[in-house]
Amino acid sequence: MKINLKNDKYRRVRGGHSRLLDVSCAKCSMHLFYYQKDGPGILKRTYLDRVIGSKIGKSNLICPKCERLLGILIVYKKENRPAIRLFEGSVSKKIARANN
Image (cartoon, rainbow, N blue to C red; front, side):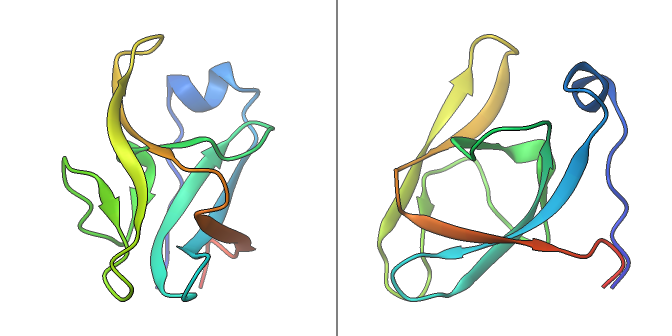
């Protein structure tokens, strides 16, 4: 599967550095989605427009396998963007290749 990373104003504001993360449940290791992380820093929230390969809707993030609540839906006021605020330690992530 070829994944193209978005190149928009949010990526440019964060220095133009992006990476693709493979996000999974920390408890049961169920793959949840791929996420385009722009800029440095830890993963506190996932913007819905950066989620790739999942049907995450406008609701809280719940693991489909173990049914654990991993994050809640918010609107990040600074950028007025819908996002999932992740609970600390609820997900694990690793860098994935964008051309997988």
